[in-house]
Length: 170
Image 1 (cartoon, one colour):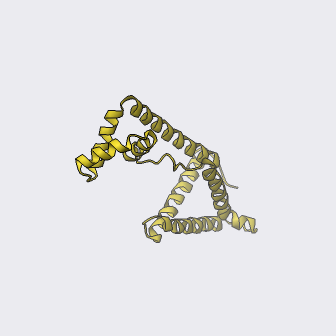
Image 2 (cartoon, one colour):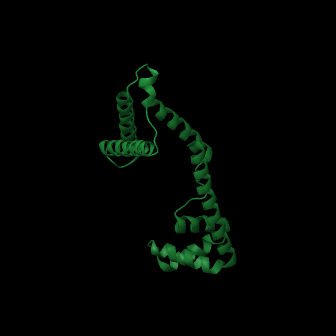
Image 3 (tube, one colour):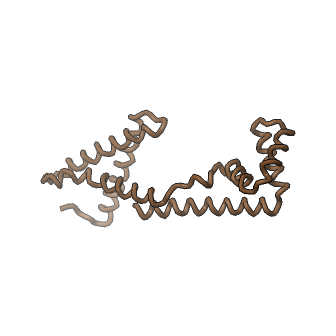
């Protein structure tokens, strides 16, 4: 999971870099057209058209400023605000490792009950979902139920695939 997260964030950052370079080439090849485009973007956001043209001309004098504005306005991205693939990978590693331990707790404590493992896993999913609601506009119960249902669906599909290919639990 950590390697997947690292690769995902790295790829996302590479795609952003490609878009920035594309915009840089456009600014270099057609500075007047890009300044007019910037003026139009400012005017569409409520700036008086004459003022927008003046501001766009002034901002276009610095190619890096113009580049940041175009990327932000056209792509909704800030090239200076890229996530770290290492932070994503390490956080993914630890959260998945801790999450994987929760349904194993009954077995680690000497119980051999699948039901106990399923209950621990369900409680873990519910709590994780409820905690995630602190970072979203969703109510805690909605986020908790969504996480529980998605986790149960993933476990159910995994069980069905295992059954279909002949895996048995002893």
